[in-house]
Image 1 (cartoon, rainbow, N blue to C red):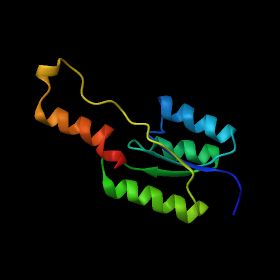
Image 2 (cartoon, one colour):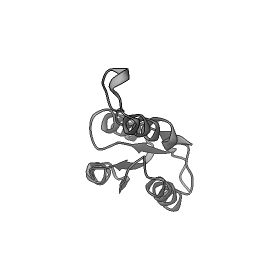
Image 3 (cartoon, rainbow, N blue to C red):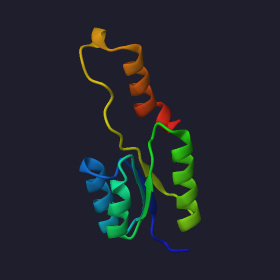
Image 4 (cartoon, rainbow, N blue to C red):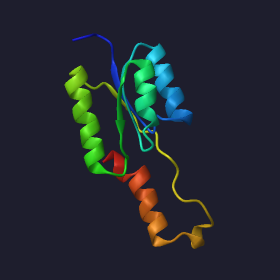
Amino acid sequence: MSDNRVAIVTAAGKGMGEAIARELARADYRLSLMSVSGAAETLADELGAVGVTGSVTEPDDLERLVKVTLKQYGRLDAIVNNTGHPPKGPLLDLTDSDWRTGLDLLLLSVI
């Protein structure tokens, strides 16, 4: 097993997630990347990483991401829980569904 640290980065297909993945790769991390769009798989190919299409709001996708990471690298040292943003708007205009989406995205995806 390599001494290189292993990290998972979610929402790694573009923007901040992609930038984080690129920086970790420059720091010699071995990576597993996930995004809803599948763009993380393309980035993973470029970086020599593992790429998974999935969502942080789907427990099965998260479990699959961790399992494939452990199978590929044998360990996990860091997780970057980069996510999108919850629904936006005036507080009193947010629906119950908006609140649930925000909770799923920002809180429940990490517990």
